[in-house]
Figure (tube, rainbow, N blue to C red):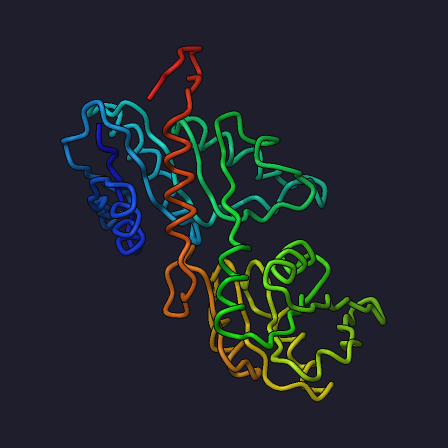
Length: 308
């Protein structure tokens, strides 16, 4: 039967794009919060024997965690054949080890929490460092969508003289791939520690950087401090104001405004998290990955095999 995309708040636009590409039905998840903080989830009741796709970006995961679970269970009670989660931004992946005594290692814990409710997961460029792939923490089918081809296409089309910069070593994997696809030079800045509490960023060395339009690329901008520090050094090196391209527009507090105030010419993001800076659509690869996830067999926790 026709799949059904259920969009959590703020995800209606992406749900509409996905539904159009997939020939799917779509509706909003009605999420009500009582004065005491409890949540009430209401879904459409026409889901019998359908593949249900819950669409929710997890920029602010704690308020959504229980409603996600309630929605998945309710969809099954209403007859859904299978229930998948599309979380373009997936939270809690960075805490993949115990950095200090007594800390929770949240990456596998949150993965297990989602496994208990969903048959499969699709996400975009999760924040993985010491975890080589999603299947190291997820027991269900977990598909990673790569944003690199779509960011590279945007750069090649909109900024043909781009010189791509990574603000720190963690950005190396995205910067190198995007630069290769866009056919543009790149450099990754390095952090230089000059004391216990003093961290600086290296000045770009390549002459090519002085003649093109600088693009600072990173996967996540939360506080924005790393990107802001990088821009300060680009300005000191005599480069023109950079365009900041970000995969996940987390933008905690005033981060977006702070990045602009630090001298960014523009801030461009993908639509993994809804924001007015969204300029790079991920609907195409998400639709393809959802179709792939729905076409695969699923092993349920009780050992039952489900086929589409």
